[in-house]
Image (cartoon, rainbow, N blue to C red; front, side, top):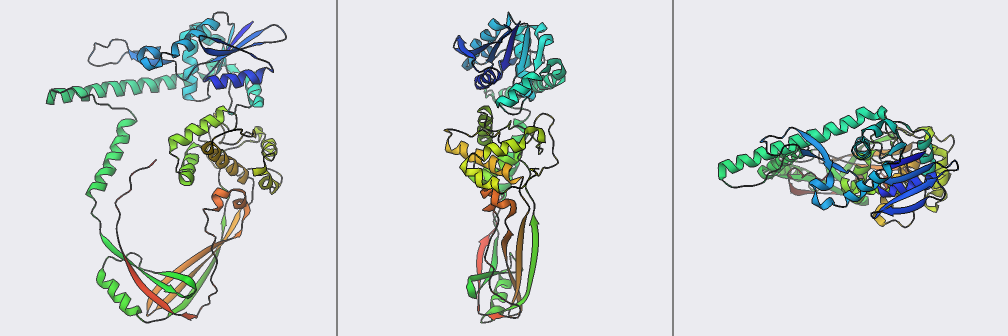
Length: 474
């Protein structure tokens, strides 16, 4: 019996081969790597890969004014820069001839499903689908891959997933090509000039949103306003309760009212609050946090997270789940992470039983983003930042709630109301496990001040102007 395993990328093929055998034999055909495994019973397994999408859509009749009939063709036929794709198609075709069984081991998502499905259907032949099975994995560790291989199920069970992926590609093609063509023709008819214009299912509404924001920015007229602050003893600055004041006469009146007057502490309000544990990362929250912490674009964060996944350091990133089931072996992951000095002391603080805080969002395909327990080696600074962000978040999920304490101090200066506030961490809890989140929380010293106390005050105004809406940055 001969078996062919098709992965999405070469690096994943290497991981799968190394998981299924202690000594896979690496070869190449037309400069495309593949791995051969011979089992004790003589059965042969070949592990190879695509290189992302191998096929793209093309109109069946380009002479028509409107293009509605499409077909899948090799990517190198529609994109001349993708000539190398032919070698991958030829390699899959070569080893598919003797295969009795096929394993679809591309990413477990819509695009991954379609990539593998098209490879099997258009390279290995229509009957290959009936002989195909699907591996489902969310991490590229040996344990996960062996389990996924042993539990492979008939690919036909994912037929609807492949169909939905194909439908999306067809919709994108029909929308983009036909509307782009109509826009280009319209400009040609009106101006007698050929200007190639572009439209797309996602591109067009996105550009519309950006255009509307740009219009708002251009028509914005800044308006002056003032804020009034009082500096009192002990380095404290209090704000006038009116906040932004747009009437200069009112500003002058308040300044005159406060001139030469002391500040009297009229009320001190104390408040305690609980800062609950965070939720596990899904792709959107990881991208938002990486932008806030490091200024990374969502695209950059996704690329790094994808590569960390391919290297086996973290789980599959394109997930919307906030769940971490016990079946992931959470205790084992924590144990493996504790071998890294960076995380050892953090994990020592955790108390059993190890149950993570979770959100409500689920994803049938994948759990929330988490480290696998494999310690990264020789990764770049940016990769280390994303890995640490994911790992510290994961560890903090097993901590205890943090406690905060705040005070608000109301002041009276010449009959005008001012106030200032302070916040401090009274119990670190999970914040001590995640340095990125710890530094985001105000932890200020409380002044030694009492109700009824009077202190010198100096009141000033600051002139500012309103700002236009900000451009989108994500």
